[in-house]
Amino acid sequence: MQSIDEVLLIDDDQISNFLTTSLLKRIGLARNISICLDGREPMDLLQNRKATKAPFPDLILLDINMPDMNGFEFLKSFRELRECPHQPVIAILTTSQNYQDIEAVKDFPEIEVFLNKPLYEEDVQFLLSEYF
Image 1 (tube, rainbow, N blue to C red):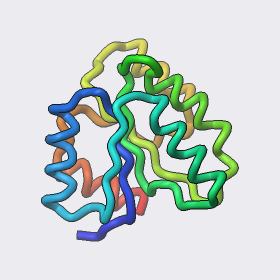
Image 2: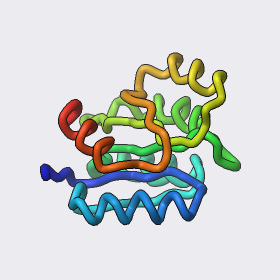
Image 3: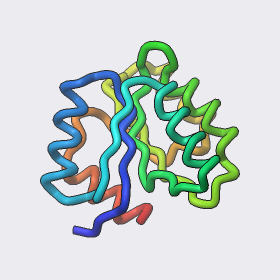
Image 4: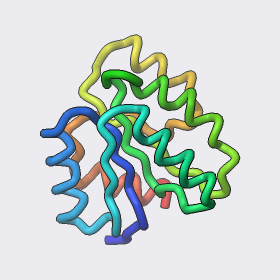
């Protein structure tokens, strides 16, 4: 399977993070997997990378419902970093079936795809074939 440099997983659910990282490691998707437990932590990480001209992750798997800063708030803040030379593919990875969440995704052209948890190998293959 093709691999990418880095996946940034943004999710407050530890069990989901364990399952997702286990899958990504098993299939060898990425050389690095970074995990952030809310929307603020990755903003600090990405702002630091932008300031130091370090590469952004290739893929961001983003949960919607998180404490402190939810996925939509993260995306609004992320727009300020859009000037970076390498834009990551952003996929929503959520258990939310809330109609309002699904509709709100339409307001964010940064989002490439909406996936349901748990992540399956077929989902990863789809992401690779469509975006990498």
